[in-house]
Length: 171
Ligand code: ZN
View 1 (cartoon, rainbow, N blue to C red):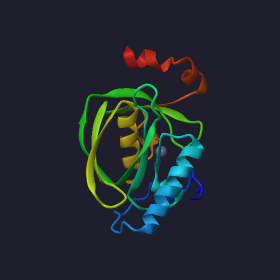
View 2 (view 1 turned 45 degrees about the horizontal axis):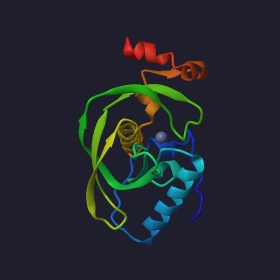
View 3 (view 1 turned 90 degrees about the vertical axis):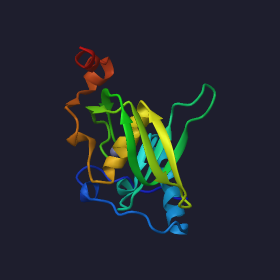
């Protein structure tokens, strides 16, 4: 495995459409293993292939809604499609490609994704709250969409720290 460099905002690769994966081969497995290591090392909750410069429909999402005492785990999603959404949530959202910057983004509260695993088998997975937000954020990356395009506005460090953005969301 190897760490890959995470590209940051300003790199054109973040604004391009990604192509579907058609070969579930050792090259894909290498990419997934590298992305896994890169995500863990960056301490993030999600990573899309274009963020490491690869224009393919591959994303990783960290499932953090786990029973007490269990470790969060990474879900590998190849050719993911959002098939169901419900509810809504508005809160701060960030991106490893835009370090230190957060914006207020509204997303569904529950999301179901249909995808393939690293061997090409189809499966469905549900995400709630942060995981639902991540599914949407990472799938957006595959269309070249950064969260800044969807944010109602960006937050200052102070607002983020104090949580004052909650007032306008709840109110
Ligand atoms: Zn991102």
